Image 1 (cartoon, helix red, strand yellow):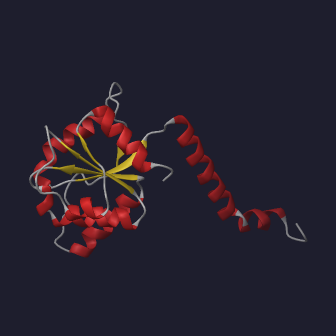
Image 2 (cartoon, one colour; image 1 turned 45 degrees about the vertical axis):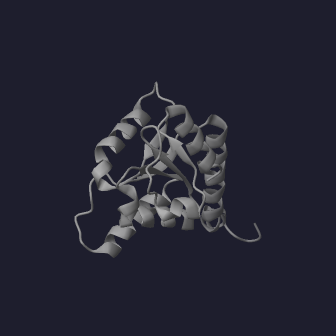
Image 3 (spheres, rainbow, N blue to C red; image 1 turned 60 degrees about the vertical axis):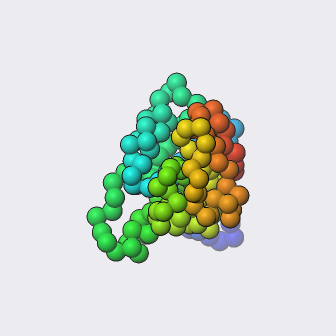
Length: 168
């Protein structure tokens, strides 16, 4: 240690230890099929359907398994930058963003921004729809970034989430 006391050595290397711990946790999570952290992006009109998806993710008999970091209640503010900061922090904590597609999704400026922000942060993104086929109008970012679109089928969604989350 070259003249440094052990206390100073450890203090100087706290960052290295934290990085190592994070790498080990990530590897263990990959090996065990750990629950993913997900952000759900959706138009506010679709809250009821999204709450059903959240419930399925909590059900231990479901193939869908993720920790939901999305916004549960709208931010009590009209300050768009304040809202962006709050959403950005939630996306940052996730490995994947799930975009819930409906007839209202393409018109939502927030969904478009959340997709672009997720991509910019290097997060995986998957889009899902309810029913027999996706809505006619999709957010532009879905095609622009070749985001996979899957039906609301537990197994297909679970596989897409895992694939898109990858090693993130």
